Image (cartoon, rainbow, N blue to C red):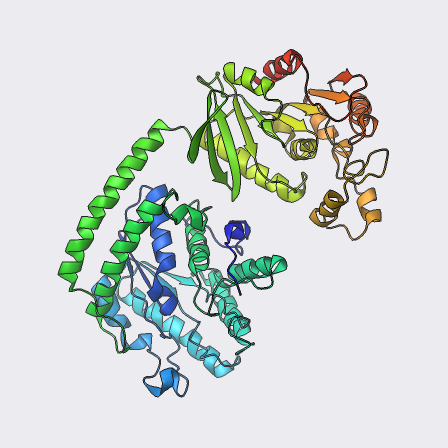
Length: 560
């Protein structure tokens, strides 16, 4: 069995939930079983909150291994050494000791005691949850936030209790149903199930929890992401972001982890419990003293990060590209880059490449000199599919809202990049200043389908069939989802087009792509300019003299 790094977890959509704003409180306490006792997801949550918000919470974790909210325990638990701890025994002391304003509770994994779904056990869980809420409210807790139980993986449990994940699913779905009563519930279970299923499509040996119960770092990060999303906090990080030496949050995360590993055991011991084998924490006074020193270090890191952020226009790795600063970072779980001009032109005009950033860079270099930003999002093998359009939507929103880019982008579709640019443009015609296509693919039947004069590409044709979910080639051939089929929105929004092409192109035949675009766009009243390269195949791209390309983009995108 092997663990797959879950960089794709940020792509797994959470179940629909009611968006909440960040709590306007000082102290947040997490309670639960061994998964909360481990504390990984609490550390990730606090790290991201510190890095991305102005809020400074006191966050305390008082999870206890083996614990239930149902009060049940199987015969012979822990080899007969002790029954499962029951939160009923300690909750009042926890509340009195930690004094939470917000209480997050993650129970369920142990509450069905690894037995089939049974109404009696299920009712014990429901009663326990309601009891916890009542006690919390009586103690002055402003809000209880419930997490559905994490995933149980019978594969990693060597087939033990194969039914149990369904039991946890039932517990979680009951919690989700309580949203109708105004409860705040964050769905962990269904999101983890979906993530694991997605991973196993690619590798049947993949896992999130090595032992089938306790999530690894990637699973804890996924849990944290759902809590952060619930509060409307941007959380598209991967484990690499928290990993030294290069992770952008690694220093902050290490300090948060160090502080929590002092504070949490101290409060757990101060409140008291009956579970054997748990190492006692420091006395609270000493723990708070040590935590205060770590807090000073955290503040220094945040101050330095804030200063660096104020100096750098974008996050991520900075490098040089043809004499200009390039920033590589992540948006919506995908790598992106932005090349910045020395001085931005008024309105922050920008050029967005569909594919093959950096190939034939002369127009980009010239436009950088005129104050344009150049951007690219890496979504390879998505071929302008609906999923690619969604990622582009997220990048556009980030650039125009957070960084103040112009509301209309100049799109550059080189070869297959035409599918990306035109399909996004058709879905967002009011956000496009102009489109420059360089031997652009405008119909996937031509390339990669190879259903006309072109050579085609079987591998990429397979991607098309999968990305659009076509049941067979006949459905793909009949589908009206190509740029050639969706020009009307662009014409109505008066988007000007420029195509540069070789009239001997054997890969992306011009008459099956550019030729059809020209004919149909003109009939719709649209403006299109063609620059024909006589006798030229698919390569080389571009023009020896890029002036027409530069002037076209500058004319239509510089002033909006």
